Image 1 (cartoon, rainbow, N blue to C red):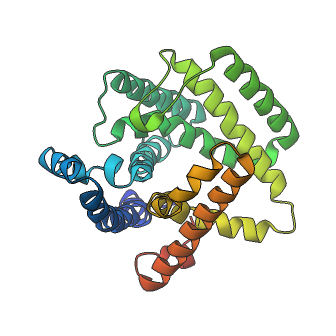
Image 2: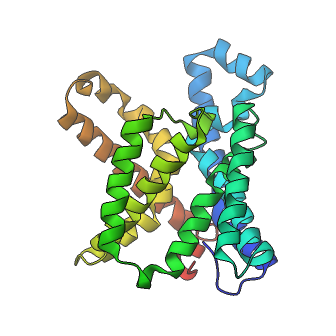
Length: 274
């Protein structure tokens, strides 16, 4: 996410290009596809959303796109913390990121989205801690981290039993009930990815990871076309996995098609290392 020795303006440009531009592009694609379908299916709902402007919201056009905006704000806050406010003190970085988290949590409890700035503030400590972990990853025992993360996730999740939906700011009243399971779960996934990295097919997995943006941003557009399958797969997990595989595959190849048709929008995926 951060470029070595990058200036703030350069950082903003790079992240704008990799987050905001694709977000706007996928919003436009989704709006063009979804709006006529809504008009044909339910005209009263179409005009209702048009009158209150919700027709143009992420939540009605393409809900997963909120994540790109929230990540944009989280990266800006993290960059300022790491390189401007406290460039050499890891403890200071962690402390300030937790202040951002607390502020975001307060705003969330008041129901203030602020164009997903609230979401970005809540996500800030995860970015900062991830950056600190990356800097010390060669000095850390990965097996110990993995075992600790798994135990921490299981224990904290069992104790708090949090119900979380960050997209609509549905969070536990106790911030630790969100923070502890999320952090331990993140470390668990990072550690698992480290060990997966030793597999022979890691290049293929890395390739899928690099293009996962398309699955996230396009699966909502693909889902209506495979929706008829849901009538047959509701109570069968095998067919549910099959439908998920089909949906992800179609999203993936649709993304590759768009990347080839609009190469300037996605050129960073070929020539930029972050």
